[in-house]
Image 1 (cartoon, helix red, strand yellow):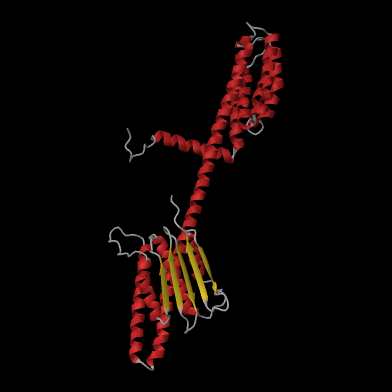
Image 2: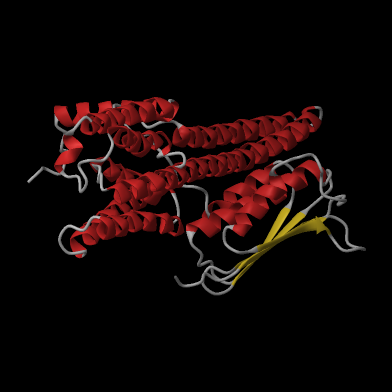
Length: 412
């Protein structure tokens, strides 16, 4: 038995024959007439050699004129040049010579070249084109009637069997060729599909990376901006508050740098010679208090209300966390200095959660700046079949409202 980790290597002679056959096929595809002319010349020479006198060994009428025998030999062999391009026309062209061959009793063996035309007819044309093979039986009947030799079935049955065999071989080769072409076409389509899947996976991964980097960098930069604005205002009145703002900026910057480094470590190709980087899990709802503390430190008052007990998997927790993070980031950017935010979380069932984030800022239409915030929130929500609404609050209330709902998990 051949070991699993070893593949059988073809014999050197087999490889040589395969390479030679492939080269011959390639040359024949480029120059089909060359091969047709060579094969026709070979069979024409063989027919003429037989016409020199050997035909009398099997002839029913050895006294047939030599000129007629030569003409019949050429009539059977020369049409072979069209055996691949026009096999039916070539077979019909040999039919009169076959009838004359039978009528005169010459019974030339060159008539067997018609079987080669039958093979190509079955190989390249539909089955209905095989009707012209009946002309071969007509010639056999004429030979049996004009020059009988033994019983009639001894003349007709071999012709019938030969035609059927040649046609069967042609149809078999055709079926095998069609099957091979179908396999090659399927392999090409699978290769194209594989490349498309790889491109789609790469595009999805790029989108996921862009979303994560936007959530990480965008939020922390918004917090840093708020802290910097507050520190600049406090610097003239309370140096101690300015120092606290600077400390908070440093802390937030280090956190952003740490999260960004962990994300880049995931993207970096794994080096088997070095230890794996220390990676921390993605944030969950247990990290929400730390997020809110940073937002409050940046100057945005946030009030939270929680109903129920959280019982959702980490993936859904990450979605809820990122939506809250993005909503508060937008509030820091666009709501104004006097705005406040309110977060309401309601848990129900297995994996179901409803989150509403509102603020008392300026409101207004959603920003049309090609950002990734709202599209990123909708993409995360769609992963779990949820719904997301984001827009200004209903008049007379002022500000912005983001409403997220993730349904219960469906059992697999």
